[in-house]
Image (cartoon, rainbow, N blue to C red; front, side, top):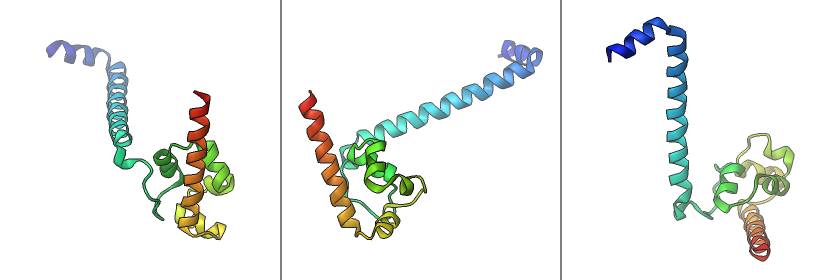
Length: 117
């Protein structure tokens, strides 16, 4: 341990940069593990939409690419950071009608993907 302290004292800037880099690597490794475990759980797939959900969350859950989700809800609404409840209201739909559209899009994409294989 004394060797590490001696190197750190001789090269304080480099040691600081190394420490910051190691903290960032640890943060992103934990984040990757969390998201991998969360989205690999079948309980988080194709769940019923709730008003608090964002389009990104719904797209992950229903396995819909970002561009397709933006096309469905409108690119202008997708970039405003609105929830699905707010988007449904602005589009004059109920949340159930929006979910039906998302479900239909998901099934269409799954059909296209299976026919390509």
